[in-house]
Image (cartoon, rainbow, N blue to C red; front, side, top):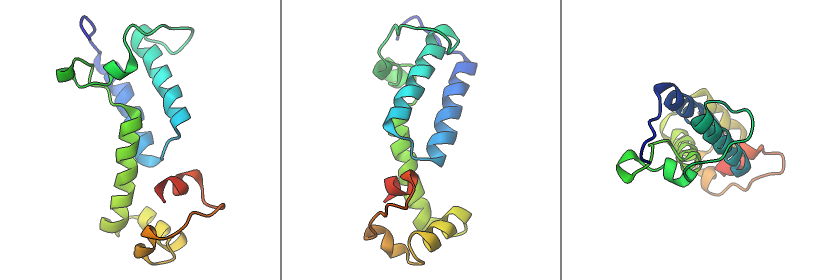
Length: 131
């Protein structure tokens, strides 16, 4: 994206959203679309207020700098990676409070159940996305 430099504050804003929320929750696609829209408005206008028009497609903005983008994370892909990290935590970080809770409440004290357990209506959206 020629002629556009992303300031440190804008980069920090996008990183904060992706690092915290994507690593904590599996975010619905509709929410990611809204977040991308807000980030686009902030990127182009410096504010999230009012109408904005994108100067470059968001898919281009999220490319690496080497590929001609701005190096801003694609939240959809980052969210998938963070969701997979939660699965990794289940098997390799037994000291985590979240892992202990998930193993006891969802997997009924047997981690091998992860591969065979069926989601229940009572499971939250986030649990259903992990299963």
